[in-house]
Image (cartoon, rainbow, N blue to C red; front, side, top):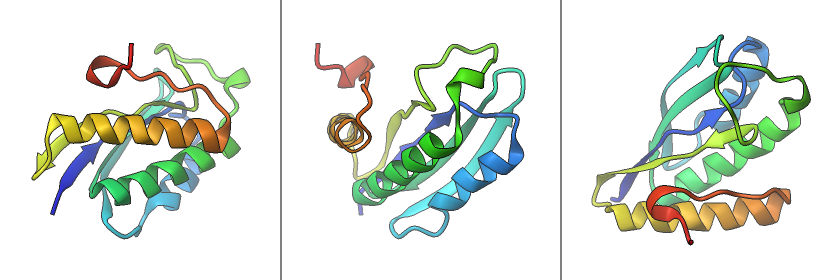
Length: 131
């Protein structure tokens, strides 16, 4: 089984009830497991660690985007760390029977899905960048 790690960062680190609603959205999804999450008040962001199959991670991250877009208002957001959006970054790391190439494909596919579904721009960086 292919296993990839995803480390999405959301732009909320202070409002525990908002963080919990977002995290609850991705609990117990098939082919994906939330290993850990931690929040930083001064940066006002939460970092999650997920592992799963590419399809399991895709479903989880799309749900994460959906809930974060509903609950986080960047017009009222402030923190020490700059941010690009309510879901700020989503790095992928190959773990088992996966390669960097698999992670690049997943990042590009997810970027297209997020952009189409939520009508927001997506920035791909590092090896996943298309230009």
